[in-house]
Image (cartoon, rainbow, N blue to C red; front, side, top):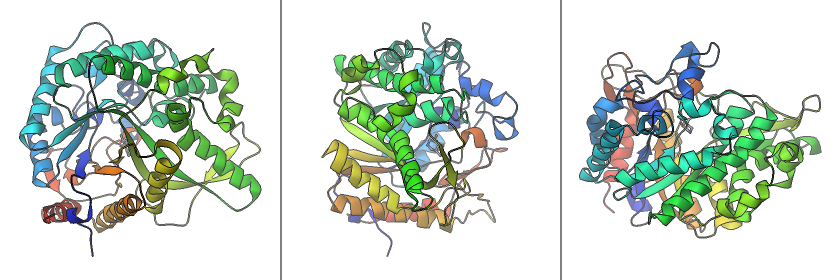
Amino acid sequence: MRLTRADFPQGFLFGAATAAYQIEGSAFGGAGPSHWDTFAATPGNVVRAEDGSRACDHYHLWQTDLDLMQQAGFNAYRFSTSWARVMPEGRGAVNRDALDFYDRLVDGMLARGLRPFQTLYHWDLPSALADLGGWTNRDVALWFADYAEIITDRIGDRVAAIATINEPWCVAWLSHFLGLHAPGHRDIRAAARAMHHVLLAHGTALERLRGLGRGNLGIVLNFEHAAPASQEPADVLAAATQDAIFNRWFIEGLTRGTYPAEVLAGLGPHMPQDWQADMTLIGQKIDWLGVNYYTRAHHAFAPETAWPHTVTRPGPLPKTRMGWEIYPEGLYGFLTRLARDHVGNLPLFVTENGMADADQVLNGTVNDPVREDFLFAHLAATRRAIADGANVQGFFCWSLLDNYEWAEGYEKRFGLVHVDFETLRRTPKASYHALARALAHPV
Ligand code: IFM
């Protein structure tokens, strides 16, 4: 038996999530260039060098997309506002068309009974700020707070919740240590700085918004279950180190006023001077925490490599088109672990969960049974975490639409709704209809 709305607490929010650069079309409406435009234009970074200039053209088709949200029976929509759209140079001049666009978008959500969950930063750093060092420059915290103030001045009176940053691990580690996302650095000093400045920016913006009377402020972290590749002590240690980098650095910075010793062992010498003095600002109270969860990874000790001396190995479970193992148990694990070890009764939201496949339209329909099973298994894991005491108040599928999957271009389809990137035609997939049936169920 599949779960329905009635299996969740009264008032539980169901929604889908998107991000500006992945759907809007950055060429429209006077947006400035972002570091994703230049990363994508550099050979070898992105599959087929695709970028977000047109994407799903949500900039023009947003009403259709909000209708799809409403027709699915969702009661919340997680979207991001683009810094490069609102402030094309990152600082200074404001693009009035951008403010008008987000104003209409939020009103459109409210008119359809969708609670707007805004994310302030989902990776489109304005190029002018990237030129100044981006996340490696401490000033990014103030630039970000200024942008946060400007956009919330326009729409903050109507949004239900605001997240400062989406997935700091990706902003900092994936992009400055592993080099796989913009700006594509593979540099431990840049990574250490970004790992700290991303939380400093969160704290600075949070303080600014709180001072302006804004409420329901949070942050969205991503978590990945870190398993040892074997039971050898060295592999167990490798998994613990990766767990500390991925799953503990940000939440401990936010809630414990320091970073895990295992990570400081590697990053310590490269950290900004006096980083400890920022931890009170970083550790300010948040009103909710967003949890993005997709998979687990297996880690092995790699003595021949530099710190953190780890490599990943393939796991045994079925995998999605991203090559990610399907492991719903990991979501249960993080929701209960966060409640137990870090945030107590703080409201948690699953702000992203979903999977990529090579979905195709056949005779006007898209069959995606693997995604259906995936989503219902993760909903069941969430329900079990709630029963075991985690205060989870909502679940957002990633994503409403097939969209620009960053370095993977348009090849990996995460949507509940198929998008034909030639015609821009939207076709709801079977998983969309299955969710709509589950949500139509009387409470
Ligand atoms: O598409 C991304 C999203 O932008 C952030 N979280 C993970 C998704 C899938 O990779």
